[in-house]
Image (cartoon, rainbow, N blue to C red):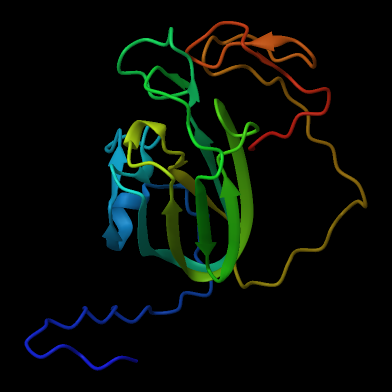
Length: 228
């Protein structure tokens, strides 16, 4: 490690986490607002902070930046982390002040990137045509009693409204450290009806749906992936 600068205040030492192997009741899914848990950042600011569904973390009016932090979890176990990323597309007719799915400021750069590190796993996403104007949902499992994250952003321009973002996430406990129960049958079945949270309409494969901003703008895939 580099030597500390004379007179500089050393970073705080994280409090030790007391391991909890199991809990009597399953914890409720936890909303994760990245900004609320950050321990360091440079040139990154939240947007829509204060609500779990609207909070977005993105590069500010700069070309490079990062944010990192950690989240203490109530029990040592296997957790499912779910969140999405997105990037704005250009539409000169987009309403003034709108940032997603379209904006009227200019063309985003397809080489803009986000490097996402979660508990030692790294993925790089670029703001190409597949991301611009769309949401990409990400799910991964983590082990332990702590979530550690770092998002590094790089852009060819210094215009905040053209930058891609990481949306707030949700953590769900899959299992604690107790032995898994015996399976009563080799197969299982889960049935239900899925509706669009934007308009309340039932989702049907190949049908067009609203994205909350524009009607009938997206088409449901024949085999859709759902965050359950």
